[in-house]
Amino acid sequence: MRLFYLEMKKIFSWKILLLLAFVNVVLYFLLFEFEIKYFPNGRPAGDYFKIEQQMIEKYGVDLNEAEYQDFVAEYELEVKKAEEYLQNDPQAAAAGLTSYEEFRNLDSNDSEYEAKRNYADLVIFDRGEDLFWELEAREGIIDYYTYRIESLKEDINRETGEKKERFERLLKDEKYGVFSNTVIDNFTNIKGSIAIIVLSSIVVLISPIFLRDHIASVVPLQYVSKKGRTVYRTKWLAGLVSTALVSIVLLTFYLGLYSTNEIAPYFEVPLYAFVADIYWYDLTFFQYICLSAAAIFVCSMLLGILSMAVSTVVQNTIVLVGVQIILMSAMIALVTTYLIVDMISIWNWKMLMPTGYLLLAISTAWFMFYVWRREYQRDVL
Image 1 (cartoon, rainbow, N blue to C red):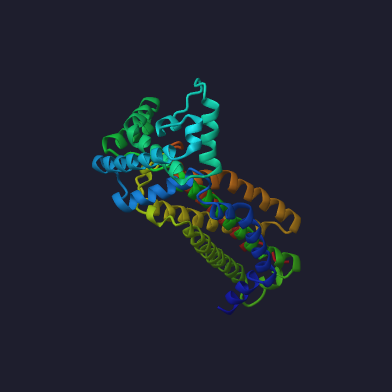
Image 2 (cartoon, rainbow, N blue to C red):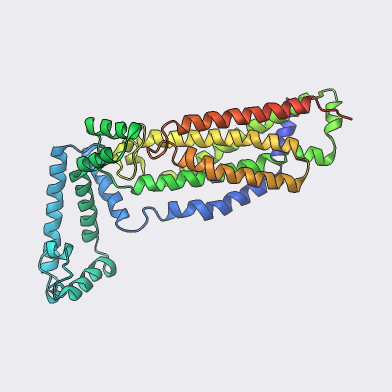
């Protein structure tokens, strides 16, 4: 136990912790900050977010026909407010705009088009009138609902095999997309950033675990001591515990920051309700977050094992850095993209996630057992 404590202490040395903090600060500002600081990003994304939160509070996570009609009635009341705004604005009269319908559907063939276009830009961009932005968001949601069936039918006609069956099942079960991609796109970017930050942190933390002993030439002394080669096993245990600990801490920290985006109302929204993408499984948004966190944790553990195995084999700092860069590049380009960011997207093979993780686990386990066997058969002289 004392040896385990000493190994943990070496892993979490002040130099490594300082480097870990530096890596996290840099990657936070490069990858993560924007998705927190600027969410929702611009308009009408922010207006979709506001209207959808109101919808969830009033109607719940599903929108039936009666609730849709109530939503349309609210939209018509907002249109009346827009009509009053235009009728009471002298600049609107000067531009020749007398109704919201005319404001919404400007005709480029109109002789007064330029004046009307300039006035519309004034209201939308210069004045930034919330009423008109929110009307645009409401109209988008109405379009999602109006064309929900036609959209699925188009997907059915376009796709084949399991994808077609998935779309047919959604149509049969009346599972339609009515929410914008604002929240789901934000989380997709967030989880990709978290994955890169966590995996990078694990590489920084674990890479030196065996290399430092090789450089100090203390491995033969360790193996002929009373503990013998159990030192090697203890180092592995310390590395796995450290990997799990850092992964959990970082996931908790960054997901805690993500929660400040006020996405809690969407937790019970099913994934099929978002129009941005279709997924193989009918998870809620909260379940999707949990699945994504679990995927990042599993990948970090596998990367920790690979990093320790590499650290065992490589006995030169420059070579270790080069190998770890290649390993991290592969993890980011392939694993992060396909097994974390797009892990259950219908546009990927349905069995990609389970097959990918199975192959990754098998290859990692093989490499681990290879270096273990190599180390236990190694001549200490």
